Image (tube, rainbow, N blue to C red; front, side, top):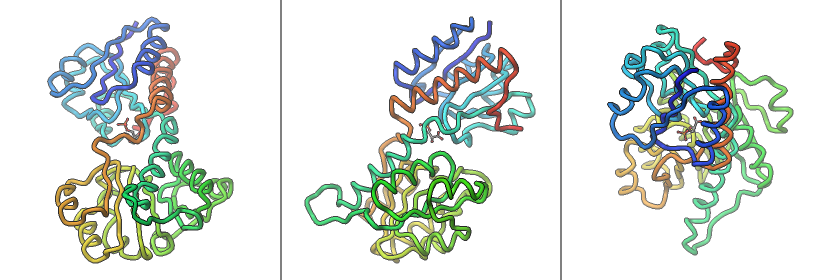
Length: 307
Ligand code: 3PG
Protein backbone atom coordinates (compact mmCIF):
# COMPACT_ATOMS: atom_id res chain seq x y z
CA UNK A 1 0.00 0.00 0.00
CA UNK A 2 1.37 3.38 -1.06
CA UNK A 3 0.19 6.84 -0.09
CA UNK A 4 -0.86 9.02 -3.01
CA UNK A 5 -1.71 12.72 -2.86
CA UNK A 6 -3.68 14.48 -5.60
CA UNK A 7 -2.54 18.09 -5.12
CA UNK A 8 -4.36 20.43 -7.45
CA UNK A 9 -4.64 24.14 -6.82
CA UNK A 10 -6.98 24.10 -9.85
CA UNK A 11 -9.05 20.97 -9.17
CA UNK A 12 -10.08 18.28 -11.63
CA UNK A 13 -13.82 17.80 -12.17
CA UNK A 14 -15.46 15.68 -9.45
CA UNK A 15 -15.96 12.87 -11.93
CA UNK A 16 -12.27 12.83 -12.85
CA UNK A 17 -11.19 13.11 -9.23
CA UNK A 18 -13.46 10.20 -8.20
CA UNK A 19 -12.16 8.16 -11.12
CA UNK A 20 -8.53 8.79 -10.18
CA UNK A 21 -9.20 7.78 -6.57
CA UNK A 22 -11.06 4.62 -7.63
CA UNK A 23 -8.23 3.47 -9.90
CA UNK A 24 -5.63 3.96 -7.18
CA UNK A 25 -7.77 2.42 -4.44
CA UNK A 26 -8.41 -0.66 -6.61
CA UNK A 27 -4.70 -1.34 -6.33
CA UNK A 28 -4.82 -0.91 -2.57
CA UNK A 29 -3.29 2.57 -2.39
CA UNK A 30 -4.39 5.17 0.14
CA UNK A 31 -5.46 8.40 -1.58
CA UNK A 32 -5.86 11.94 -0.27
CA UNK A 33 -6.64 15.17 -2.10
CA UNK A 34 -5.50 18.74 -1.52
CA UNK A 35 -7.49 21.11 -3.70
CA UNK A 36 -7.63 24.90 -4.10
CA UNK A 37 -4.86 25.40 -1.56
CA UNK A 38 -3.79 28.98 -1.09
CA UNK A 39 -0.60 28.59 0.89
CA UNK A 40 2.45 26.51 0.06
CA UNK A 41 2.61 25.41 3.72
CA UNK A 42 -0.58 23.42 3.12
CA UNK A 43 1.27 21.55 0.39
CA UNK A 44 4.36 21.05 2.56
CA UNK A 45 2.18 19.52 5.25
CA UNK A 46 0.21 17.33 2.87
CA UNK A 47 3.28 15.79 1.19
CA UNK A 48 4.96 14.80 4.47
CA UNK A 49 4.20 11.07 4.22
CA UNK A 50 3.32 10.52 0.55
CA UNK A 51 4.97 8.13 -1.89
CA UNK A 52 3.33 9.56 -5.00
CA UNK A 53 2.00 12.91 -6.11
CA UNK A 54 -0.44 13.69 -8.92
CA UNK A 55 -0.41 17.38 -9.86
CA UNK A 56 -1.38 19.84 -12.59
CA UNK A 57 0.42 23.20 -12.88
CA UNK A 58 1.23 23.08 -9.17
CA UNK A 59 4.79 24.16 -8.40
CA UNK A 60 6.76 21.17 -7.22
CA UNK A 61 9.95 22.82 -6.10
CA UNK A 62 13.04 21.59 -4.31
CA UNK A 63 11.42 22.79 -1.05
CA UNK A 64 8.28 20.76 -1.67
CA UNK A 65 10.45 17.70 -2.29
CA UNK A 66 12.43 18.42 0.88
CA UNK A 67 9.16 18.14 2.81
CA UNK A 68 8.39 14.77 1.19
CA UNK A 69 11.09 12.31 2.30
CA UNK A 70 9.13 9.26 1.04
CA UNK A 71 8.27 10.67 -2.39
CA UNK A 72 9.07 8.24 -5.23
CA UNK A 73 7.08 9.58 -8.17
CA UNK A 74 5.41 12.82 -9.33
CA UNK A 75 3.00 12.58 -12.23
CA UNK A 76 2.08 15.84 -13.91
CA UNK A 77 -1.44 15.21 -15.27
CA UNK A 78 -0.83 17.22 -18.42
CA UNK A 79 1.85 17.96 -20.96
CA UNK A 80 4.12 20.77 -19.72
CA UNK A 81 6.34 19.95 -16.74
CA UNK A 82 8.13 23.29 -16.33
CA UNK A 83 6.39 23.54 -12.93
CA UNK A 84 8.50 20.70 -11.55
CA UNK A 85 12.14 21.06 -10.54
CA UNK A 86 13.52 18.14 -12.54
CA UNK A 87 17.10 18.51 -11.30
CA UNK A 88 16.01 18.40 -7.68
CA UNK A 89 13.84 15.35 -8.41
CA UNK A 90 16.67 13.56 -10.18
CA UNK A 91 19.05 14.28 -7.32
CA UNK A 92 16.57 12.77 -4.88
CA UNK A 93 15.87 9.78 -7.14
CA UNK A 94 12.25 10.87 -7.68
CA UNK A 95 10.72 9.84 -11.01
CA UNK A 96 8.81 12.62 -12.81
CA UNK A 97 6.31 11.74 -15.53
CA UNK A 98 3.78 13.65 -17.65
CA UNK A 99 0.71 12.38 -19.52
CA UNK A 100 1.40 13.54 -23.10
CA UNK A 101 -1.50 13.99 -25.49
CA UNK A 102 -4.23 13.52 -22.89
CA UNK A 103 -5.51 17.11 -22.82
CA UNK A 104 -4.40 18.23 -26.26
CA UNK A 105 -7.78 18.41 -27.99
CA UNK A 106 -9.16 20.67 -25.26
CA UNK A 107 -6.30 23.13 -25.72
CA UNK A 108 -6.63 23.03 -29.51
CA UNK A 109 -10.37 23.74 -29.38
CA UNK A 110 -9.70 26.76 -27.16
CA UNK A 111 -7.29 28.13 -29.81
CA UNK A 112 -10.17 28.38 -32.24
CA UNK A 113 -12.78 29.47 -29.69
CA UNK A 114 -10.63 32.47 -28.81
CA UNK A 115 -9.55 33.14 -32.39
CA UNK A 116 -13.07 33.24 -33.81
CA UNK A 117 -14.16 35.53 -30.99
CA UNK A 118 -11.23 37.85 -31.70
CA UNK A 119 -11.64 38.08 -35.47
CA UNK A 120 -15.42 38.56 -35.02
CA UNK A 121 -14.59 41.62 -32.90
CA UNK A 122 -15.82 40.04 -29.65
CA UNK A 123 -19.27 39.75 -31.24
CA UNK A 124 -19.85 43.49 -30.89
CA UNK A 125 -21.81 43.64 -34.12
CA UNK A 126 -19.12 45.30 -36.23
CA UNK A 127 -17.72 43.56 -39.33
CA UNK A 128 -15.22 40.82 -38.61
CA UNK A 129 -13.26 38.37 -40.76
CA UNK A 130 -13.20 34.62 -41.45
CA UNK A 131 -10.63 31.84 -41.19
CA UNK A 132 -11.39 30.18 -44.54
CA UNK A 133 -8.36 30.37 -46.85
CA UNK A 134 -6.15 32.08 -44.25
CA UNK A 135 -2.70 30.81 -43.32
CA UNK A 136 -1.96 29.47 -39.85
CA UNK A 137 1.53 28.64 -38.64
CA UNK A 138 1.82 26.08 -35.86
CA UNK A 139 5.03 26.41 -33.88
CA UNK A 140 5.59 23.12 -32.08
CA UNK A 141 3.99 20.13 -33.79
CA UNK A 142 3.42 17.78 -30.87
CA UNK A 143 0.06 16.44 -29.72
CA UNK A 144 -1.60 19.87 -29.34
CA UNK A 145 -0.13 21.28 -32.57
CA UNK A 146 -1.45 18.30 -34.52
CA UNK A 147 -4.97 18.77 -33.08
CA UNK A 148 -4.76 22.46 -34.06
CA UNK A 149 -3.84 21.39 -37.62
CA UNK A 150 -6.82 19.04 -37.83
CA UNK A 151 -9.27 21.72 -36.69
CA UNK A 152 -7.65 24.42 -38.86
CA UNK A 153 -8.15 22.22 -41.91
CA UNK A 154 -11.81 21.90 -40.96
CA UNK A 155 -12.02 25.69 -41.13
CA UNK A 156 -10.43 25.53 -44.62
CA UNK A 157 -7.18 27.18 -43.50
CA UNK A 158 -3.78 26.61 -45.11
CA UNK A 159 -1.66 24.96 -42.44
CA UNK A 160 2.09 25.41 -41.96
CA UNK A 161 3.99 23.75 -39.13
CA UNK A 162 7.46 23.89 -37.64
CA UNK A 163 9.02 21.48 -35.18
CA UNK A 164 12.70 20.65 -34.92
CA UNK A 165 12.04 17.28 -33.27
CA UNK A 166 9.11 15.80 -35.21
CA UNK A 167 9.99 13.43 -38.07
CA UNK A 168 8.97 14.24 -41.66
CA UNK A 169 6.22 11.56 -41.70
CA UNK A 170 4.31 13.48 -39.02
CA UNK A 171 3.90 16.50 -41.29
CA UNK A 172 3.06 14.29 -44.27
CA UNK A 173 0.46 12.35 -42.32
CA UNK A 174 -1.15 15.57 -41.08
CA UNK A 175 -1.18 16.98 -44.62
CA UNK A 176 0.48 20.26 -43.63
CA UNK A 177 3.33 22.30 -45.09
CA UNK A 178 6.51 21.46 -43.19
CA UNK A 179 8.39 24.72 -42.58
CA UNK A 180 11.99 24.38 -41.43
CA UNK A 181 12.88 28.02 -40.90
CA UNK A 182 11.13 29.92 -38.13
CA UNK A 183 11.45 33.25 -39.97
CA UNK A 184 9.69 31.68 -42.93
CA UNK A 185 6.82 30.55 -40.68
CA UNK A 186 6.32 34.05 -39.26
CA UNK A 187 6.68 35.71 -42.70
CA UNK A 188 4.11 33.39 -44.27
CA UNK A 189 1.33 33.13 -41.70
CA UNK A 190 -1.23 35.69 -40.59
CA UNK A 191 -2.07 33.46 -37.60
CA UNK A 192 0.64 31.87 -35.46
CA UNK A 193 -0.31 29.38 -32.75
CA UNK A 194 2.33 28.51 -30.15
CA UNK A 195 2.69 24.95 -28.87
CA UNK A 196 6.21 24.94 -27.47
CA UNK A 197 7.31 24.16 -23.92
CA UNK A 198 8.93 26.75 -21.65
CA UNK A 199 12.58 25.81 -21.27
CA UNK A 200 16.02 27.43 -21.46
CA UNK A 201 15.83 27.49 -25.27
CA UNK A 202 12.35 28.91 -25.65
CA UNK A 203 11.94 31.42 -22.81
CA UNK A 204 11.55 34.95 -24.32
CA UNK A 205 12.19 33.49 -27.78
CA UNK A 206 9.07 35.05 -29.33
CA UNK A 207 10.44 38.53 -29.74
CA UNK A 208 9.87 41.66 -31.82
CA UNK A 209 12.28 40.59 -34.54
CA UNK A 210 10.20 37.50 -35.18
CA UNK A 211 6.75 39.01 -34.67
CA UNK A 212 7.46 41.99 -36.92
CA UNK A 213 7.85 39.59 -39.86
CA UNK A 214 4.18 38.59 -39.68
CA UNK A 215 1.88 39.70 -42.50
CA UNK A 216 -0.92 42.24 -42.22
CA UNK A 217 -3.58 41.62 -39.56
CA UNK A 218 -1.21 39.35 -37.67
CA UNK A 219 -2.65 37.38 -34.76
CA UNK A 220 -0.47 35.56 -32.24
CA UNK A 221 -2.23 32.84 -30.26
CA UNK A 222 -0.56 31.52 -27.12
CA UNK A 223 -2.04 28.55 -25.30
CA UNK A 224 1.45 27.34 -24.36
CA UNK A 225 3.32 29.33 -21.73
CA UNK A 226 3.57 33.08 -20.94
CA UNK A 227 7.33 32.76 -20.43
CA UNK A 228 8.09 32.07 -24.10
CA UNK A 229 7.07 35.64 -24.96
CA UNK A 230 9.56 38.49 -24.77
CA UNK A 231 7.13 40.99 -23.27
CA UNK A 232 9.15 44.05 -24.26
CA UNK A 233 9.06 42.85 -27.86
CA UNK A 234 5.34 42.17 -27.54
CA UNK A 235 4.66 45.75 -26.40
CA UNK A 236 6.87 47.07 -29.23
CA UNK A 237 4.83 45.02 -31.68
CA UNK A 238 1.56 46.44 -30.29
CA UNK A 239 3.02 49.95 -30.60
CA UNK A 240 4.44 49.63 -34.11
CA UNK A 241 1.78 47.48 -35.70
CA UNK A 242 -1.77 48.69 -35.23
CA UNK A 243 -3.01 45.61 -37.07
CA UNK A 244 -1.49 43.18 -34.55
CA UNK A 245 -3.53 41.20 -32.02
CA UNK A 246 -2.52 38.85 -29.23
CA UNK A 247 -4.71 36.12 -27.75
CA UNK A 248 -3.51 34.08 -24.81
CA UNK A 249 -4.65 31.49 -22.29
CA UNK A 250 -1.60 32.49 -20.28
CA UNK A 251 -1.85 36.23 -19.66
CA UNK A 252 1.36 38.28 -19.77
CA UNK A 253 2.75 40.06 -16.71
CA UNK A 254 1.99 43.35 -18.49
CA UNK A 255 -1.66 42.56 -19.06
CA UNK A 256 -2.96 45.72 -17.37
CA UNK A 257 -0.68 47.94 -19.43
CA UNK A 258 -1.77 46.18 -22.63
CA UNK A 259 -5.44 46.52 -21.64
CA UNK A 260 -5.01 50.23 -21.02
CA UNK A 261 -2.93 51.10 -24.07
CA UNK A 262 -4.14 48.65 -26.70
CA UNK A 263 -7.82 47.96 -26.03
CA UNK A 264 -9.69 45.50 -28.28
CA UNK A 265 -6.42 44.10 -29.64
CA UNK A 266 -6.02 41.26 -27.16
CA UNK A 267 -7.86 38.59 -25.27
CA UNK A 268 -6.59 36.87 -22.13
CA UNK A 269 -8.53 34.17 -20.27
CA UNK A 270 -9.02 35.20 -16.61
CA UNK A 271 -7.47 31.91 -15.48
CA UNK A 272 -5.55 29.36 -17.57
CA UNK A 273 -8.26 27.04 -18.83
CA UNK A 274 -6.99 25.30 -21.99
CA UNK A 275 -7.16 21.87 -20.38
CA UNK A 276 -10.19 22.60 -18.24
CA UNK A 277 -12.78 20.34 -19.88
CA UNK A 278 -14.32 17.28 -18.31
CA UNK A 279 -12.88 15.17 -21.13
CA UNK A 280 -9.33 16.49 -20.62
CA UNK A 281 -9.65 16.17 -16.81
CA UNK A 282 -10.70 12.53 -17.23
CA UNK A 283 -8.08 11.72 -19.85
CA UNK A 284 -5.12 13.31 -18.08
CA UNK A 285 -6.22 12.46 -14.54
CA UNK A 286 -6.99 8.80 -15.18
CA UNK A 287 -3.80 8.39 -17.23
CA UNK A 288 -1.85 9.79 -14.27
CA UNK A 289 -3.50 7.28 -11.91
CA UNK A 290 -2.71 4.38 -14.25
CA UNK A 291 0.90 5.56 -14.52
CA UNK A 292 1.24 5.68 -10.72
CA UNK A 293 -0.25 2.17 -10.47
CA UNK A 294 2.07 0.82 -13.17
CA UNK A 295 5.10 2.40 -11.53
CA UNK A 296 4.37 0.75 -8.18
CA UNK A 297 3.29 -2.54 -9.74
CA UNK A 298 6.10 -3.15 -12.21
CA UNK A 299 8.49 -0.21 -12.03
CA UNK A 300 7.14 1.07 -15.36
CA UNK A 301 8.58 4.51 -16.20
CA UNK A 302 7.43 4.87 -19.80
CA UNK A 303 6.54 8.54 -19.45
CA UNK A 304 9.49 9.61 -17.34
CA UNK A 305 10.73 13.10 -18.26
CA UNK A 306 13.75 13.38 -15.92
CA UNK A 307 15.91 10.77 -17.58
C1 3PG B 1 -0.48 21.32 -19.87
O1 3PG B 1 0.73 21.61 -19.89
O2 3PG B 1 -0.88 20.15 -19.90
C2 3PG B 1 -1.49 22.42 -19.91
O3 3PG B 1 -0.87 23.65 -19.85
C3 3PG B 1 -2.59 22.27 -18.87
O4 3PG B 1 -2.26 22.74 -17.61
P1 3PG B 1 -3.28 22.62 -16.37
O5 3PG B 1 -3.35 21.19 -15.96
O6 3PG B 1 -2.71 23.50 -15.30
O7 3PG B 1 -4.62 23.12 -16.82
